[in-house]
Length: 142
Image (tube, rainbow, N blue to C red):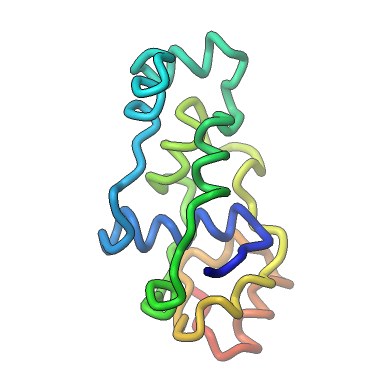
């Protein structure tokens, strides 16, 4: 199993595999996890009541950090989308407006885990240095 160094990069990969392709299943829902643990079933209320507005809910962080993604699934990723409205972000931080750096990708060390990545859409969110790193690897960055 692959080990990611940047959780935020992993989340973008999860978005593609779990919520777009549907190949990483079952799809994670923070509401289901909270209900399962007896913590209620309203992620917004939970976040506000536990001072987690504009933060990643610890239960979601734990889930995604522990989530194993096989090499075969990682090899199937040809495109990633960078966008503040990704579903994975809503599941991690139900009270988040995209106006801060909570989900910013800082390094691209994990690119090696995606041997067939060819395109990153929304790469302007990465900044010029990381965009240049994509281009250097022959990945279309738009």
